[in-house]
Length: 114
Image 1 (cartoon, rainbow, N blue to C red):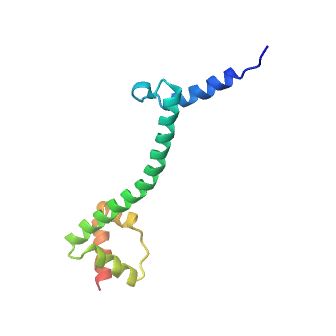
Image 2 (cartoon, one colour):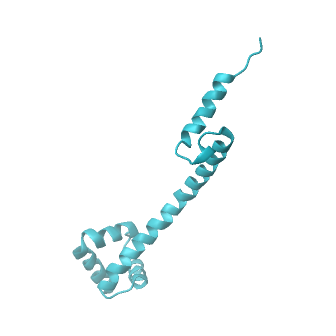
Image 3 (cartoon, rainbow, N blue to C red):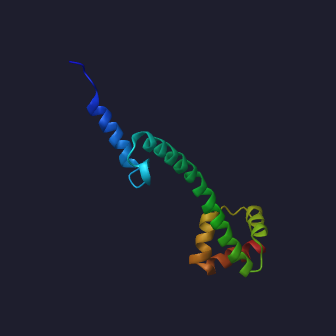
């Protein structure tokens, strides 16, 4: 009798199909198309992980800019003065301060302006 590896093959194919379960049409049922879909999904996920970092940095900069404008200084001048006064706070923390603790953010801006 010829030895086949049917169990392992079926298990591998079912694993791929499970990963693309919510897809439309034959993308979730046909193994050949499902594998292509899975590969494309992995590429999109990889790209998305890089874009997420960019998007959050943009968001933080916009929040800081809005808070700075209300205090009469532009974002670029504020960051420049921060660097000159040797204050090391990253943009994520600055945006959180601008939202959750505006009084403290105002103190930082005023200390940098002097």
